[in-house]
Image 1 (spheres, rainbow, N blue to C red):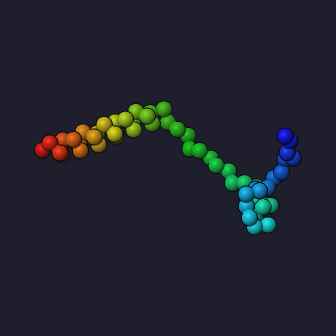
Image 2: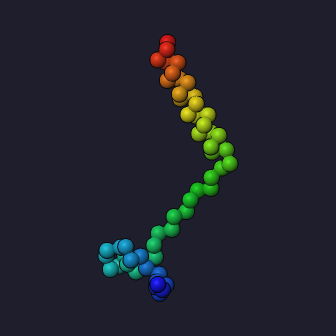
Image 3: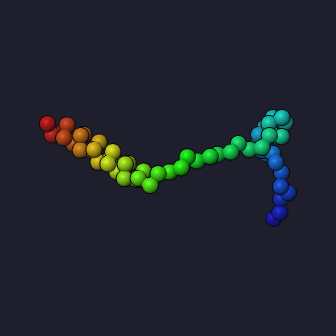
Length: 55
């Protein structure tokens, strides 16, 4: 199945928008310590909630 390469967005409904290239999705660079920060944040939130229920 071969398709010709087109520089337009076929999902756009309006004829003028079809002529525009699809929007670029630039992902922000992910830091190496993202998982560690998420773990510490989750652990702290759980500890605060658990301690609040006990106290």
